Image (cartoon, rainbow, N blue to C red; front, side, top):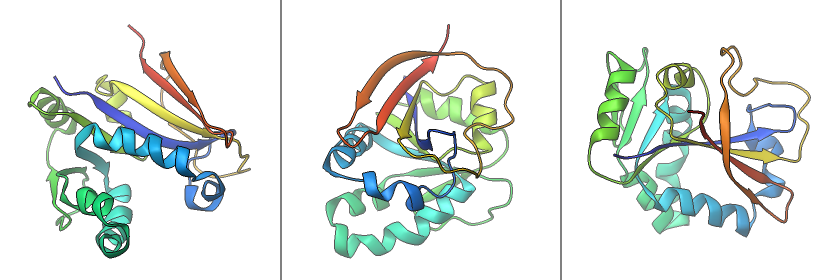
Length: 180
C-alpha cells in the first residue's frame, strides 16, 4: 500500500500563508536536498485546488531553467480535489465525488508514495478519514504575526512524533503519523 505524505511549511506561530515571503531566506542546499528526498520517493501528487492552480502557473515555465526537477514535477500524475475546478491542464485528474474514497483507492494502487503539498480544506477530509500516513511539518524559525493557520478549525487530533530533521538554518522538519 502506498503512503500519503503531506509536506507543509509553517511558522512558529502556526501560519501557512505566503511561505514565499517568510521562507525564502531558509531555502538552501539542505532544504532542497530534503525536499528532493520526499519528491523522489513519490510517483504522484495530491493537491487541493489552490495549490494546484499556484503550481500549474509556475512549474511549466520552470522546465527551461530548472531542468530535470521541473520536468519530473511536470510529468508526475497529479490528483486535484476541487468542487469548483472544471478543467485541469497540467497532467492532472480532478477528483470528482467522494474524495476520501478516491484517495483511499489511490493508496491501494501499486506504486511509490503520494506526496501532498500545501495545507487547506482538503486536510479536513483527509484527517477525518485518517488517510494521511505522515505529516512533514517544516517548522521555520519565523513569527509571521498573522495569516491562515495550520489546520485551523479542525477537531482535536492527536499525532505521534516519528522523526525530526533539523537543518543548520534553524528549520526543523517534524514528522508525525496518526496516533493509533
